Length: 203
Image 1: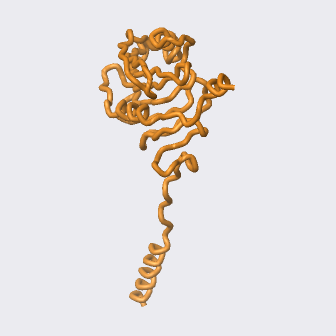
Image 2: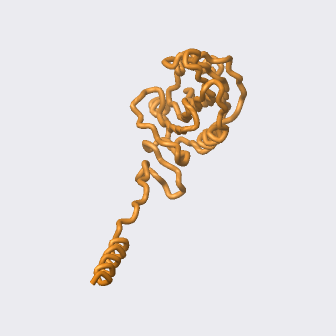
Image 3: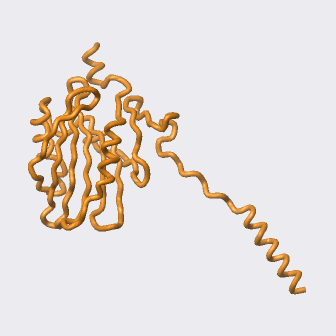
């Protein structure tokens, strides 16, 4: 009798294992915006290749950037990186060097960061001249530091920007792999149609 009950229980367990639900596929946060080559068409205006997990798309409800991703880790506190495209970066000047000075007067102002003078270098983005600004900021109260890279480029006559930040404790080491993800994001970014301002001037 006991053997028979044991056989029935084993059979039921095996059957339950056979019908157990399989883990579902992860949901693509870009859905129908994802194209066959893996790139994303955002707002019918921008095309880019999003960085892979654990980078996550930030829920955008701000006006100072158009597309942004964040990556966190548990190695220390703080341990966070951000990369973003800004359609309207801080400032007003059409001159790159003046614009970067205006930009850093407001960038991360709420974090009370003191920035070192930015190291500037020329590059090319979208087939036109662009400017790279590299600097480090120190938050003196909590003793945090932030590695920053900003690429100022042009969309028509207007200045746009890509920026990267990585936060670490003052005595912590930066993870250089994250900035490579940022560089790839910039390299693969493109505009699929003229901007609102370009269309306005064309009318």
